[in-house]
Amino acid sequence: MAQGNGFVGEYQHSLDNKGRLALPAKFREALGPRFIVARGLDKCLFVYAPFEWEQVVEKVKAMPLSQRDARNFARYFLSGATEVEPDRQGRIILPPNLREYAGLVKDVYVLGVGTRIEIWDKDTWDRMKTDIEETFSTLAESIAGI
Image (cartoon, rainbow, N blue to C red; front, side, top):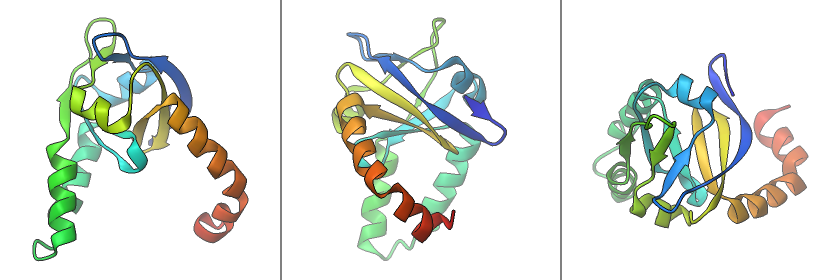
């Protein structure tokens, strides 16, 4: 569910044979009538509300054009982004290029991760989550200070 200023939660869903995905209703409400889906990091998709997407684009625009890595990141990240609009049943169509990038075929996880939503292939997220669980305490100490 989207709470306060952020998305939280982990939900299992399935893509239909047309590449459509029903996002949780609470997420759809917080995202608004149109929002952005883009290639994420670690082979998942990132979903942004328009306001958050504007902030992300501003950060990308601020990267130095003279650096090859910055140019390549901007090209790959922005060229894969697409605006989507849920249908009457609350489903969005994930374009083939984004489904292929994230390895999405049928079963997926939809995660609330603060300012964005992530869409993961079920098996990929299961493996990633197992890896994270093994080092979660260490991560909290070194990064978050929790």
